[in-house]
Image 1: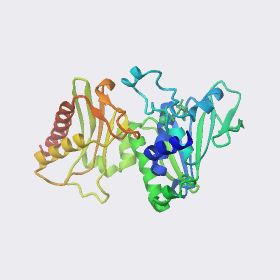
Image 2: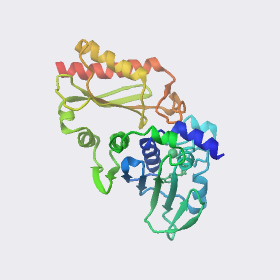
Image 3: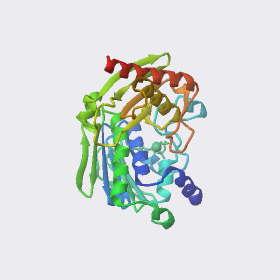
Image 4: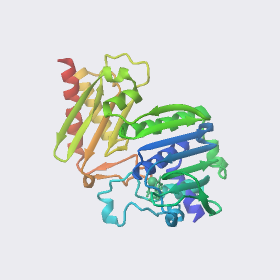
Amino acid sequence: DELISQIAAGEVVERPASVVRELVDNALDAGARNVLVKLMAGGVRSIVVEDDGCGIPVAQLPLALKRHATSKIASLNELESVATMGFRGEALAAIASVSEMAIASRTADAAHAHRLDARSGELGAAARSRGTSVEVRELFFATPARRKFLKTDATELAHCVEAVRRHALARPDVGFAIWHEGKLVDQWRPAAIEQRIGDVLGEDFIAESRAFEHSAGPLALTGRAGLPEAARSRADQQYVWVNGRYVRDKLISHAIRSAYEDVLHGQRQPSYVLFIEIAPELVDVNVHPTKIEVRFRDGRAIHQSVRRAFIDALAQSRA
Ligand code: ADP
Ligand code: MG
């Protein structure tokens, strides 16, 4: 089972940023209002994610680490309408199989917190307020071949920060802070979406982009389309979320590219943020273990709507 978990880990955990992504997903699923990410050595030495969510009842702590143990769906039917970030129940088990992991958690009605050491199974009393802290130390310590593929601490840190930015943009109502080696790297307080986009992507992006809103049947699109005349120093940032989940999707990027080409005749494609809300039964998020890919039931309708939303935003900015 250890081996199977390690193989599964290869699909879920590629680098520290994958751990950060999964742990923050869990914090948000737990209803956190504030999420704290603390890293050492780019996350390779240690990643700690603390939340103020619902916590894990002590009786369920060992279960949280079991493969395919999820508290989020009870049947395959529910997979059709999954509203949480997680549902596969494999992230914690996979991460624990390639690191030294410990979880400390406290529910609202518990007298104190409990801490479970994943390797030894040792369970003890701990001190913390309501919520959960997951510590992941020495990622890939037992799989040197995997560890060798990691880049410099600075690069791994940048990927970790990027993972949190994706969450921060999707959840402006939640506060986020990232620390590295005891220093505050970034912090975003709960805010309205417009403010959060400015906080994360820079005020210049707000000035140099147009907001759009477009809805068609079970589909609602909101976001901002960057204007190409803007001279941006930073590399272009292109973000798409489907029901709050950051995704990469060829169909969607094609639709956006074709909108820019139509309106601006082949100029470069600048930054954008696109939030797609769609009835959960019209999208399959269980395509890939990392859930970064999705499959739409009606790809053509998505393509048309995304294209339309961007064309309208860009045309309006030219008028
Ligand atoms: P999944 O998120 O797919 O359910 P995970 O392996 O990521 O699977 O987590 C396993 C279980 O552990 C979750 O279903 C949840 O019950 C519990 N859990 C993990 N992290 C947290 C957290 N931060 N707060 C509360 N519960 C958590
Ligand atoms: Mg999860």
